[in-house]
Image (cartoon, rainbow, N blue to C red; front, side, top):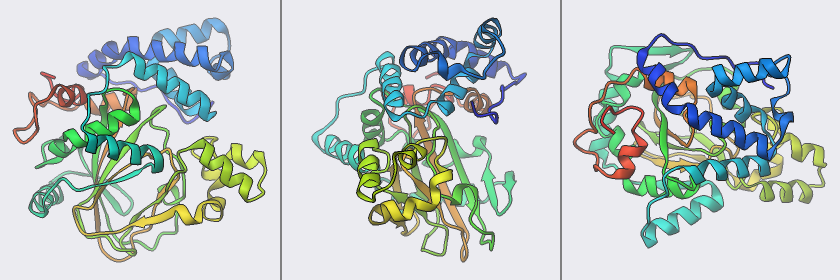
Length: 350
Protein backbone atom coordinates (compact mmCIF):
# COMPACT_ATOMS: atom_id res chain seq x y z
CA UNK A 1 0.00 0.00 0.00
CA UNK A 2 1.21 3.55 -0.70
CA UNK A 3 2.05 5.06 2.67
CA UNK A 4 1.43 8.64 1.52
CA UNK A 5 -2.34 8.22 1.74
CA UNK A 6 -3.82 9.88 4.83
CA UNK A 7 -7.17 9.88 6.56
CA UNK A 8 -8.94 13.15 5.82
CA UNK A 9 -10.48 14.90 8.84
CA UNK A 10 -12.61 18.04 8.88
CA UNK A 11 -14.92 19.79 11.33
CA UNK A 12 -16.99 21.24 8.48
CA UNK A 13 -20.60 20.00 8.90
CA UNK A 14 -21.07 19.89 5.13
CA UNK A 15 -18.05 17.62 4.79
CA UNK A 16 -19.58 15.29 7.35
CA UNK A 17 -22.87 15.29 5.45
CA UNK A 18 -21.13 14.53 2.16
CA UNK A 19 -19.18 11.68 3.77
CA UNK A 20 -22.40 10.16 5.12
CA UNK A 21 -24.03 10.59 1.71
CA UNK A 22 -21.14 8.81 -0.01
CA UNK A 23 -20.65 6.01 2.56
CA UNK A 24 -22.76 3.44 0.66
CA UNK A 25 -20.72 4.15 -2.48
CA UNK A 26 -17.45 3.71 -0.59
CA UNK A 27 -18.55 0.38 0.89
CA UNK A 28 -19.74 -0.82 -2.53
CA UNK A 29 -16.34 -0.01 -4.08
CA UNK A 30 -14.56 -1.87 -1.27
CA UNK A 31 -16.72 -4.92 -2.06
CA UNK A 32 -15.90 -4.50 -5.77
CA UNK A 33 -12.17 -4.61 -5.05
CA UNK A 34 -12.58 -7.62 -2.78
CA UNK A 35 -14.53 -9.46 -5.49
CA UNK A 36 -12.14 -8.58 -8.34
CA UNK A 37 -8.72 -8.55 -6.66
CA UNK A 38 -9.24 -10.44 -3.42
CA UNK A 39 -7.89 -9.83 0.05
CA UNK A 40 -4.35 -9.14 -1.17
CA UNK A 41 -5.43 -5.59 -2.11
CA UNK A 42 -5.91 -4.82 1.59
CA UNK A 43 -2.45 -6.00 2.65
CA UNK A 44 -0.75 -3.53 4.96
CA UNK A 45 -3.86 -1.49 5.79
CA UNK A 46 -4.15 -2.88 9.32
CA UNK A 47 -2.36 -5.23 11.72
CA UNK A 48 -5.27 -7.64 12.06
CA UNK A 49 -8.61 -8.53 10.50
CA UNK A 50 -10.43 -6.80 13.35
CA UNK A 51 -8.36 -3.67 12.87
CA UNK A 52 -9.09 -3.74 9.13
CA UNK A 53 -12.82 -3.98 9.74
CA UNK A 54 -12.60 -1.01 12.13
CA UNK A 55 -10.76 1.04 9.51
CA UNK A 56 -13.30 0.10 6.83
CA UNK A 57 -16.23 0.97 9.10
CA UNK A 58 -14.75 4.24 10.37
CA UNK A 59 -13.03 5.54 7.24
CA UNK A 60 -14.43 3.76 4.16
CA UNK A 61 -13.64 6.69 1.87
CA UNK A 62 -9.97 6.66 2.79
CA UNK A 63 -9.83 2.89 2.32
CA UNK A 64 -11.30 3.37 -1.18
CA UNK A 65 -8.68 5.99 -2.01
CA UNK A 66 -5.90 3.67 -0.84
CA UNK A 67 -7.33 0.83 -2.93
CA UNK A 68 -7.51 3.08 -6.00
CA UNK A 69 -3.81 3.78 -5.55
CA UNK A 70 -2.70 0.22 -4.81
CA UNK A 71 -4.62 -1.72 -7.50
CA UNK A 72 -2.23 -1.70 -10.46
CA UNK A 73 -3.42 -4.45 -12.81
CA UNK A 74 -5.19 -2.66 -15.70
CA UNK A 75 -7.68 -5.50 -16.18
CA UNK A 76 -8.64 -5.28 -12.52
CA UNK A 77 -9.06 -1.51 -12.73
CA UNK A 78 -11.24 -1.81 -15.84
CA UNK A 79 -13.52 -4.36 -14.18
CA UNK A 80 -13.81 -2.35 -10.95
CA UNK A 81 -14.66 0.76 -13.00
CA UNK A 82 -17.30 -1.22 -14.90
CA UNK A 83 -18.92 -2.32 -11.64
CA UNK A 84 -18.91 1.24 -10.28
CA UNK A 85 -20.52 2.54 -13.48
CA UNK A 86 -23.23 -0.11 -13.36
CA UNK A 87 -24.56 1.40 -10.11
CA UNK A 88 -24.50 5.03 -11.33
CA UNK A 89 -27.21 6.77 -13.37
CA UNK A 90 -27.10 5.62 -16.97
CA UNK A 91 -25.24 7.70 -19.51
CA UNK A 92 -27.52 9.90 -21.63
CA UNK A 93 -28.38 9.17 -25.23
CA UNK A 94 -26.07 10.95 -27.65
CA UNK A 95 -26.17 12.41 -31.15
CA UNK A 96 -24.25 10.84 -34.00
CA UNK A 97 -21.68 13.63 -33.77
CA UNK A 98 -21.17 13.08 -30.03
CA UNK A 99 -20.89 9.33 -30.61
CA UNK A 100 -18.13 9.95 -33.16
CA UNK A 101 -16.28 12.22 -30.74
CA UNK A 102 -16.64 9.64 -27.98
CA UNK A 103 -15.24 6.92 -30.25
CA UNK A 104 -12.20 9.07 -31.03
CA UNK A 105 -11.66 9.74 -27.33
CA UNK A 106 -11.92 6.03 -26.48
CA UNK A 107 -9.27 5.24 -29.11
CA UNK A 108 -6.65 7.94 -28.54
CA UNK A 109 -7.43 9.28 -25.06
CA UNK A 110 -7.42 12.83 -26.44
CA UNK A 111 -10.10 15.10 -27.93
CA UNK A 112 -9.84 18.82 -28.84
CA UNK A 113 -12.92 20.87 -27.95
CA UNK A 114 -13.93 24.35 -29.07
CA UNK A 115 -16.89 25.62 -27.08
CA UNK A 116 -16.02 29.13 -25.80
CA UNK A 117 -15.58 32.30 -27.83
CA UNK A 118 -12.40 34.40 -27.44
CA UNK A 119 -14.47 36.99 -25.55
CA UNK A 120 -15.71 34.36 -23.10
CA UNK A 121 -12.19 33.02 -22.55
CA UNK A 122 -10.94 36.55 -21.87
CA UNK A 123 -13.75 37.16 -19.37
CA UNK A 124 -12.87 33.95 -17.53
CA UNK A 125 -9.14 34.68 -17.52
CA UNK A 126 -9.50 38.32 -16.45
CA UNK A 127 -11.77 37.35 -13.56
CA UNK A 128 -9.50 34.58 -12.26
CA UNK A 129 -6.27 36.55 -12.74
CA UNK A 130 -7.62 39.50 -10.74
CA UNK A 131 -8.72 37.65 -7.59
CA UNK A 132 -7.37 38.71 -4.22
CA UNK A 133 -6.63 35.25 -2.83
CA UNK A 134 -4.35 32.56 -4.25
CA UNK A 135 -2.66 29.44 -2.90
CA UNK A 136 1.04 29.62 -3.76
CA UNK A 137 3.14 26.58 -4.69
CA UNK A 138 6.56 27.63 -5.95
CA UNK A 139 6.14 29.44 -9.30
CA UNK A 140 2.44 28.48 -9.42
CA UNK A 141 -0.50 30.44 -7.97
CA UNK A 142 -3.71 28.41 -7.58
CA UNK A 143 -7.09 30.13 -7.56
CA UNK A 144 -9.20 29.09 -4.58
CA UNK A 145 -12.07 26.83 -5.58
CA UNK A 146 -14.66 29.34 -4.34
CA UNK A 147 -13.48 31.77 -7.03
CA UNK A 148 -13.21 29.14 -9.77
CA UNK A 149 -16.86 28.08 -9.63
CA UNK A 150 -18.18 31.64 -9.85
CA UNK A 151 -15.85 32.76 -12.63
CA UNK A 152 -17.59 33.52 -15.92
CA UNK A 153 -18.27 30.43 -18.05
CA UNK A 154 -16.36 27.86 -15.95
CA UNK A 155 -19.38 25.78 -14.96
CA UNK A 156 -21.09 26.37 -18.32
CA UNK A 157 -18.08 24.80 -20.02
CA UNK A 158 -17.71 22.03 -17.42
CA UNK A 159 -21.36 21.00 -17.85
CA UNK A 160 -21.69 21.57 -21.59
CA UNK A 161 -23.76 18.73 -23.09
CA UNK A 162 -21.03 17.89 -25.61
CA UNK A 163 -18.48 17.49 -22.82
CA UNK A 164 -20.76 15.47 -20.56
CA UNK A 165 -21.75 13.22 -23.47
CA UNK A 166 -18.15 12.24 -24.27
CA UNK A 167 -17.20 11.89 -20.60
CA UNK A 168 -20.24 9.73 -19.84
CA UNK A 169 -19.27 7.40 -22.68
CA UNK A 170 -15.76 7.18 -21.23
CA UNK A 171 -16.98 6.46 -17.69
CA UNK A 172 -19.87 4.24 -18.76
CA UNK A 173 -22.30 6.29 -16.67
CA UNK A 174 -23.29 9.86 -15.88
CA UNK A 175 -20.17 11.75 -14.70
CA UNK A 176 -19.53 13.66 -11.49
CA UNK A 177 -17.35 16.77 -11.33
CA UNK A 178 -15.05 15.74 -8.48
CA UNK A 179 -12.71 18.74 -8.73
CA UNK A 180 -12.44 22.03 -10.58
CA UNK A 181 -9.29 24.14 -10.53
CA UNK A 182 -7.40 27.01 -12.16
CA UNK A 183 -3.82 28.12 -11.77
CA UNK A 184 -1.15 30.47 -13.09
CA UNK A 185 2.47 29.47 -13.57
CA UNK A 186 5.26 32.04 -13.83
CA UNK A 187 8.41 31.40 -15.89
CA UNK A 188 10.96 29.37 -13.94
CA UNK A 189 14.42 27.91 -14.44
CA UNK A 190 13.52 24.95 -12.24
CA UNK A 191 14.49 21.55 -13.61
CA UNK A 192 11.76 19.07 -14.53
CA UNK A 193 10.16 17.44 -11.49
CA UNK A 194 6.80 16.18 -10.24
CA UNK A 195 4.11 16.99 -12.78
CA UNK A 196 6.81 17.73 -15.35
CA UNK A 197 7.85 14.06 -15.45
CA UNK A 198 5.83 11.60 -17.53
CA UNK A 199 3.25 9.93 -15.31
CA UNK A 200 -0.26 8.52 -15.11
CA UNK A 201 -3.02 10.03 -12.97
CA UNK A 202 -5.05 7.69 -10.80
CA UNK A 203 -7.73 10.05 -9.56
CA UNK A 204 -10.29 7.23 -9.77
CA UNK A 205 -10.52 3.73 -11.21
CA UNK A 206 -11.61 5.57 -14.36
CA UNK A 207 -11.50 9.34 -14.82
CA UNK A 208 -10.61 12.07 -17.30
CA UNK A 209 -9.90 15.80 -17.36
CA UNK A 210 -10.89 18.85 -19.32
CA UNK A 211 -8.13 21.44 -19.84
CA UNK A 212 -8.42 24.98 -21.18
CA UNK A 213 -5.55 27.41 -21.72
CA UNK A 214 -6.41 30.88 -20.41
CA UNK A 215 -3.31 32.33 -22.09
CA UNK A 216 -1.51 31.77 -25.38
CA UNK A 217 0.78 28.74 -24.98
CA UNK A 218 3.82 28.05 -27.16
CA UNK A 219 6.55 25.46 -26.66
CA UNK A 220 8.32 27.76 -24.15
CA UNK A 221 5.20 28.64 -22.17
CA UNK A 222 4.74 25.33 -20.36
CA UNK A 223 2.53 23.35 -22.76
CA UNK A 224 0.86 20.10 -21.78
CA UNK A 225 2.41 16.99 -23.35
CA UNK A 226 0.47 13.77 -23.98
CA UNK A 227 1.31 10.29 -25.27
CA UNK A 228 -1.72 9.20 -27.29
CA UNK A 229 -3.10 5.68 -26.83
CA UNK A 230 -1.04 4.97 -23.69
CA UNK A 231 -4.21 4.65 -21.62
CA UNK A 232 -4.83 1.39 -23.54
CA UNK A 233 -3.05 -1.62 -21.94
CA UNK A 234 -3.10 -3.64 -25.18
CA UNK A 235 -1.46 -0.78 -27.09
CA UNK A 236 1.20 -0.41 -24.38
CA UNK A 237 1.96 -4.14 -24.28
CA UNK A 238 2.28 -4.24 -28.09
CA UNK A 239 4.73 -1.32 -28.06
CA UNK A 240 6.82 -2.95 -25.33
CA UNK A 241 6.97 -6.20 -27.32
CA UNK A 242 7.81 -4.37 -30.56
CA UNK A 243 10.80 -2.75 -28.84
CA UNK A 244 12.00 -6.11 -27.48
CA UNK A 245 11.52 -5.00 -23.90
CA UNK A 246 10.72 -7.31 -20.99
CA UNK A 247 7.39 -7.96 -19.34
CA UNK A 248 8.91 -6.56 -16.15
CA UNK A 249 9.09 -3.19 -17.89
CA UNK A 250 5.54 -3.59 -19.17
CA UNK A 251 4.33 -4.18 -15.63
CA UNK A 252 6.35 -1.23 -14.31
CA UNK A 253 4.46 1.06 -16.69
CA UNK A 254 1.28 0.37 -14.71
CA UNK A 255 2.65 0.38 -11.15
CA UNK A 256 1.87 3.47 -9.11
CA UNK A 257 1.92 6.62 -11.23
CA UNK A 258 4.47 5.21 -13.69
CA UNK A 259 7.14 7.80 -12.89
CA UNK A 260 9.73 5.09 -12.23
CA UNK A 261 9.54 4.23 -15.94
CA UNK A 262 9.32 7.84 -17.16
CA UNK A 263 12.74 7.90 -18.82
CA UNK A 264 11.81 5.21 -21.32
CA UNK A 265 8.48 6.77 -22.37
CA UNK A 266 9.98 8.82 -25.28
CA UNK A 267 11.75 5.70 -26.60
CA UNK A 268 8.62 3.54 -26.46
CA UNK A 269 6.00 6.06 -27.57
CA UNK A 270 7.92 8.75 -29.45
CA UNK A 271 5.52 8.85 -32.41
CA UNK A 272 2.52 9.20 -30.09
CA UNK A 273 3.93 12.06 -27.99
CA UNK A 274 2.94 15.62 -28.84
CA UNK A 275 2.81 19.05 -27.26
CA UNK A 276 -0.51 20.87 -27.09
CA UNK A 277 0.20 24.48 -28.09
CA UNK A 278 -2.25 27.13 -29.17
CA UNK A 279 -3.94 30.45 -28.42
CA UNK A 280 -5.92 31.25 -25.29
CA UNK A 281 -9.11 29.19 -25.40
CA UNK A 282 -7.44 26.03 -26.70
CA UNK A 283 -9.19 23.21 -24.86
CA UNK A 284 -9.14 19.42 -24.82
CA UNK A 285 -10.41 16.36 -23.00
CA UNK A 286 -7.76 13.88 -21.93
CA UNK A 287 -7.73 10.42 -20.42
CA UNK A 288 -4.98 11.18 -17.93
CA UNK A 289 -4.44 7.49 -17.21
CA UNK A 290 -2.39 7.85 -20.38
CA UNK A 291 1.16 9.12 -19.92
CA UNK A 292 1.42 12.91 -19.83
CA UNK A 293 3.41 15.75 -18.33
CA UNK A 294 3.66 19.51 -18.27
CA UNK A 295 6.72 21.32 -19.66
CA UNK A 296 8.50 23.91 -17.56
CA UNK A 297 7.22 27.42 -18.24
CA UNK A 298 10.25 29.40 -19.43
CA UNK A 299 8.95 32.49 -21.23
CA UNK A 300 5.43 33.76 -20.52
CA UNK A 301 3.03 33.26 -17.65
CA UNK A 302 0.61 30.39 -18.34
CA UNK A 303 -2.99 30.18 -17.12
CA UNK A 304 -4.80 26.85 -17.04
CA UNK A 305 -8.38 25.84 -16.15
CA UNK A 306 -9.08 22.18 -15.39
CA UNK A 307 -12.07 19.96 -14.55
CA UNK A 308 -11.74 16.44 -13.16
CA UNK A 309 -14.55 14.00 -13.96
CA UNK A 310 -14.99 10.66 -12.23
CA UNK A 311 -17.48 8.40 -10.51
CA UNK A 312 -16.22 8.31 -6.91
CA UNK A 313 -15.51 11.59 -5.09
CA UNK A 314 -12.92 10.62 -2.49
CA UNK A 315 -12.60 12.40 0.91
CA UNK A 316 -9.93 14.90 -0.15
CA UNK A 317 -12.16 16.05 -3.02
CA UNK A 318 -15.24 16.10 -0.78
CA UNK A 319 -13.36 18.31 1.67
CA UNK A 320 -12.83 20.83 -1.13
CA UNK A 321 -16.45 20.61 -2.27
CA UNK A 322 -17.62 21.24 1.30
CA UNK A 323 -16.34 24.82 0.96
CA UNK A 324 -18.84 25.61 -1.80
CA UNK A 325 -22.13 27.42 -1.18
CA UNK A 326 -23.76 27.59 -4.63
CA UNK A 327 -27.55 27.63 -4.42
CA UNK A 328 -28.12 26.95 -8.12
CA UNK A 329 -26.31 26.60 -11.41
CA UNK A 330 -25.17 29.87 -13.03
CA UNK A 331 -27.55 31.38 -15.59
CA UNK A 332 -25.29 30.47 -18.54
CA UNK A 333 -25.44 26.75 -17.72
CA UNK A 334 -27.98 24.55 -19.45
CA UNK A 335 -30.18 23.19 -16.66
CA UNK A 336 -30.27 19.52 -17.62
CA UNK A 337 -30.51 16.38 -15.45
CA UNK A 338 -26.94 15.54 -16.48
CA UNK A 339 -25.64 18.97 -15.43
CA UNK A 340 -27.46 18.78 -12.09
CA UNK A 341 -26.04 15.32 -11.42
CA UNK A 342 -22.50 16.35 -12.41
CA UNK A 343 -22.57 19.35 -10.04
CA UNK A 344 -24.56 17.82 -7.17
CA UNK A 345 -21.61 18.04 -4.75
CA UNK A 346 -21.21 21.79 -5.22
CA UNK A 347 -24.78 23.03 -5.83
CA UNK A 348 -27.22 22.83 -2.93
CA UNK A 349 -30.33 22.22 -5.03
CA UNK A 350 -28.89 19.66 -7.46
